[in-house]
Image 1 (cartoon, rainbow, N blue to C red):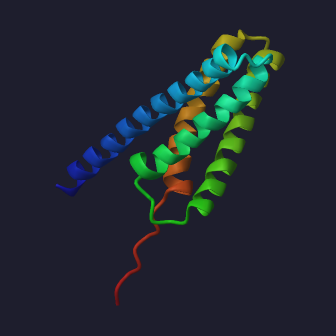
Image 2 (image 1 turned 180 degrees about the vertical axis):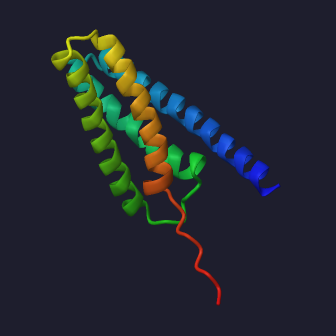
Length: 141
């Protein structure tokens, strides 16, 4: 029954990933609103940049402690891999949208949706396999 247990474990991890993503999005939106409505920052772009930093930090910490449960590795190494992964995914997101809209002339909203689905899938896979992975157990002689 290891297969059934593994499937349950994977499903639980995906569910935690979704919850973490929703929490990070709520933090991002909350900080954005705070910056614009309370602090009265004059630039939505600047406010969004500040808010994105809080949302990304929330996503990282949630992934480390809640989704993938890997607080045993040095935080700096994980943070560096997390940042590199998210930078690569952001570039891919931009490329997909540019190809979809600028090159193919298709509606940007559908391109954004496609790029976002790719982003979510690649983010989960990349975090699981590259950022918060567990090293393979060494074979005992």
